[in-house]
Image (cartoon, rainbow, N blue to C red; front, side, top):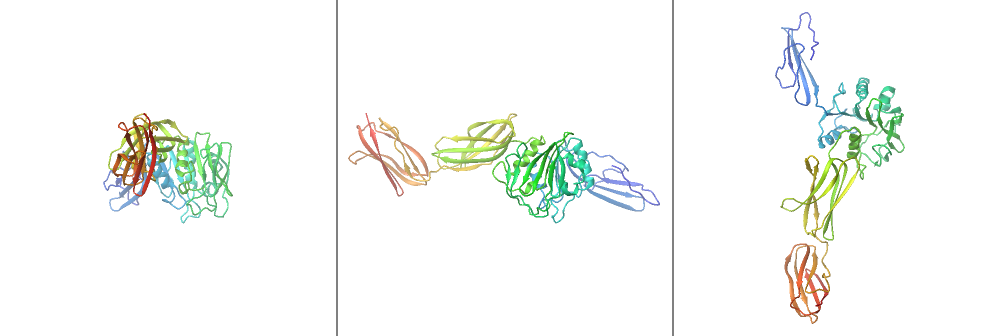
Length: 465
């Protein structure tokens, strides 16, 4: 640190530095050094004196201490109406990335300590719009010319504030930019383009209210059109440049997009940008559902990307019991493509069950999915045909009841005489099997009848010796 204070007519004779805002004097030299051992933002306070007078200056968030691999997220307004910084920060932290999140008036300088940088400048019609200053443009230019990875969004940043700056625009893969039209042009048909990270995406709405003067771009030889909004033009450019830099610029707020059907979700869009920036993320589970069909529970789940994914273990439990593993499905290792999985629980279960996935990496680390609930109770009363039929001497009878009921199942001969009572008790909703052993009966036609609540049904079976 360097002190540039002056006093007149006397000289400064004492210095008190507080480097971490804890109220303790950390150094008393004029130009001290200090080592920060923890990641974070730090205020710095300096008090100087000439022996008669004292003066104190405090710089807020003056020092940013980072680790290798940290990502910077900066936005001009904290969670503003057309800003995405807070959404990007929360998502990155949810996938275990170390994030420095800033909302300072001006961008940090330099940026070279960060693996990736995300900048959100908002729109011109915000209550307190954020301009892309020339000094910030120099900072961004230096970062990109050192091979940095940078995402930049805003409706004015490159099409108005820096539209004259051809050197900067070329680093984003842009030949020229335009300020767009004055009309409010919200997202209605924002189409991803083939051959880019947005391929297959389509967004039809957004919660961003101010969409005036949306910037449009013409790509240069290295830039790729990533999004086109109907009636507006090219509103996103993806670029891999000659300095090794990778950039993605976008005129709308990513964090305000309304999700559609996968792959058209803002989480997937951000995840694809991270992949483009060579930032690995763990397995991203995009859906997990379960349905009961004919007594079997069919589980389906999808991932947007996978890193070192060895296996999914499927676990099941009933209410007030612990999870147990019932099977597994092999993962796809490492992939940035959407993957679909399924598993069938064939235990002919009934009632309410809970399922979860245990995703295990090749190094043994694991993570659980959220639980899902599947109601495996039948939707109606039913009595199935016995099997086998004809039989000798035993057969199996299957029946289903949708709710708790008093159930009787009786067997009659061809004269209508009762020969056996198979069920005579209260049963919870579900599907059941009951065995009928006719070892003591003679060959012939028999009938079995179920009664449960107001349901009654009779079926015929044949004992053939």
